[in-house]
Every structure is written in C-alpha cells, then in structure tokens.
Amino acid sequence: MKQIKNGESYLHVLAMEQILATIAGSRLKITDLISMYQLWSRF
Image 1 (cartoon, rainbow, N blue to C red):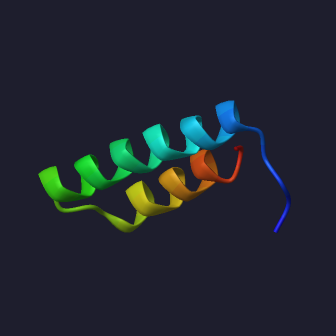
Image 2 (tube, rainbow, N blue to C red; image 1 turned 120 degrees about the vertical axis):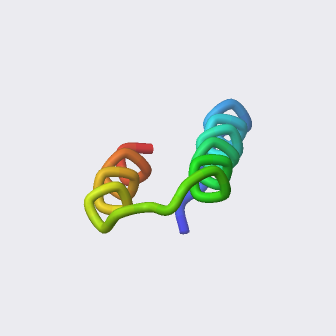
C-alpha cells in the first residue's frame, strides 16, 4: 500500500463517508456501485 499525505487521507475519509451515507440512504443499483468504484479509484 502506498503512502499518502495527510490531506489526501482526509479526502479519502470524506469520500468514504459520502459513499456510506449514500448506501445508507438508498438502495443502490449495480450501475451506482460501478460509478462509485470508478470515482473512488481516482483517489
């Protein structure tokens, strides 16, 4: 696993919280999961 700076780590946490909130708030379709994965993989 590569080392990341604190700022980047903080962005990861914010992004994960947003994803979890989305999952908790609605039932996701497969396409939603795929698009979220693609967004996540950019970090």
